[in-house]
Length: 494
Image (cartoon, rainbow, N blue to C red; front, top):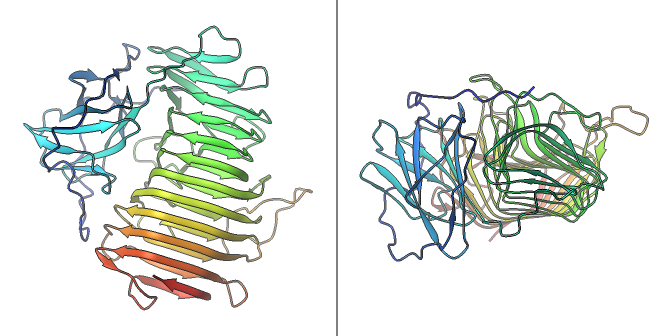
């Protein structure tokens, strides 16, 4: 049963103020470039009038008030903008003074300043920002600048499940078939439901609208978790431009063996089932797949964000050619931001990350191998040819980098007879990390790990080229950033 999110009226006490080293953020406190070109077109989304608006934030986009969707965690504002310039966004805290505004990711200059007790931002198409006020990471404001869709499908197209803007739709489980394989969620639409497809090539899920999955149980026998979106064996699929929220304990989205597919500009937000009750929800899991591209996404969840596996339960497949580019993540209190693992019984190769941002890499207080960048090989497979280029970590709360072959208690899969597989160690080899930047760490946190399983199962052939940690270069394994280093070979620094 779908339920409406409880409205939140008050800003919590400014908890979560931490002592970070070397704070790099200047967002919200610098003069902006007044010569920026203005976008010629801005699309203001129109929502169902009865929806409650945030009573924490007021947002203007191009001098017009914009709707802000509230939850007891993040608040969300989104709109469309043309690709030829910037749009002015003005944010106020209702009834409160803005003393400080942190605009994530820190490594991107979003042209922001505080002026007359307002945060002024200039955003362009595909910008995805997380704004935190007065030193608190509780109830951040997410602002998403979508492209304007000039090719919206017809509402009466029988091959499209079309959800009109300005309405809330009680859709339930949407099952796609070869006869109807497209879902379009128009800007301003809120769809309460889930989307599922199996062995349907060319699935398309698109639109600037909002897929909302609240209090959803597992609803399909092919999967072992609740989900908002689950595609299994859907080659050549496209998922783009939607915003998605889920409070279900499981995976918000899952793509199994969806070869030659593209996931672009998806904003996926996992929240707790009830306020204060921790709910683990992976944001985006890929299990098996070849030539899969994930770009311009923003994921926030209470477990892994961008997670890649080769086998889990009865879901499995070869992994060869997975590309993550211009992606932002925040794992709140569990999991890893950018993760390969743990369920890796089958080989994983040719995985490439470029321009990625871990804005907060969460922890539950006790160290459990959670990291901004994680390769946890927990199966017999070999993980090879993994590259990272231009990596930025705004706030490391546990580990910065954790690369290991290790035994664990997770289910690594079943054989064809349904018997649970037994653990045997694998290998990690051929990892390149170029221009990796750790900007801030929590006190006594932020260490790095290189850990093979034993003398026969190593972490090998790892190259760091430009590894910056709190404004200094890391040039060897003798540096004190390494908490654990064991069973490795051919570790190079450039």
